[in-house]
Amino acid sequence: MARADTGPEFIEALARGLEVIRAFQPGRPVMTLTEVATATGLARPTARRILLTLRDLGYARAEHGGFALTPRVLELGVSYVRSMGLWEVARPHLERLVAQTRESSSIAQLDGSDIVYVARVAVPKIVTLSVQVGTRFPALQTSLGKVLLAALPPAEVERVLAEPSRSGIEPRWRPGADEREAVLRAVRAKGWALTDEQLALGIRSVAAPLRDGLGNVIAAVNVNAHAAETSVEKLTDDHLPLLLRTAGAISADWAQYETVPHVTAS
Image 1: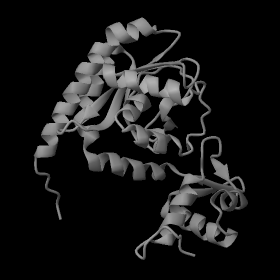
Image 2 (image 1 turned 30 degrees about the vertical axis):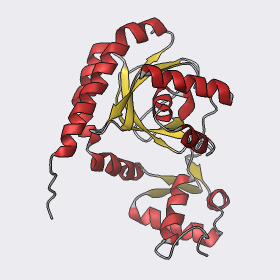
Image 3 (image 1 turned 180 degrees about the horizontal axis):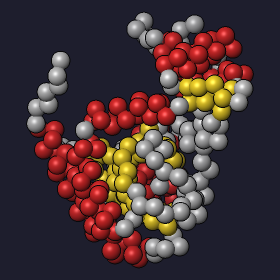
Image 4 (image 1 turned 180 degrees about the vertical axis):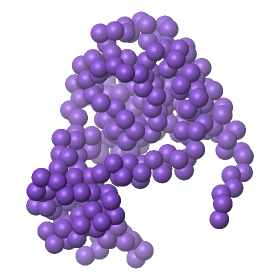
């Protein structure tokens, strides 16, 4: 049955397939047919056909009496990143920043009330939460998310944060509306954001916006550190100037990249 808020070109089967993929949340790597059907609201026969199709295409596999996604699913996200060209533009800058700070650096974009990591250069450290391309966290409790939310009009912030997080993470910091707006006002005024163990214990980071040639915020970039090893003062006094310089360089290169015609082979 077609959804009430969609048009005649809407492909219901494709939407259902994507819903099945999204049903595999953190902590649920293997799901039975019944669990998938319940999570998506699909009939068991429909869920079964989709899972078997994903299996035949290499995006899922049968495992321990249920189904699990395969690493091939990551190709869907990687295709998005590659289509933007942002990774190719940002990579040398991120690698230089990581070499200077000896801390991990990531780029993320907003997806509903979450951030999603689209690029990352990491250093081997034990951290509370694992991060890789495709990882999502609640936006408000991250430095990257604060930067991205601060770039939105206040009414849009309300709408975005009204959406439930799909990260599976319960953040430590849950501000009220007044405190939240004060924090985002400060981010707009400073042009960068800090988070200090607001998402989870041990995670401390600082972030800055990435902009296109028109000055629009298209993503955010951060330096992420372990709280036991890196103080807030070291983040803001030593790493932040390097981060701001990197964000400016990526933004300038991206603005130039946008002006160059890109030809693809037919």
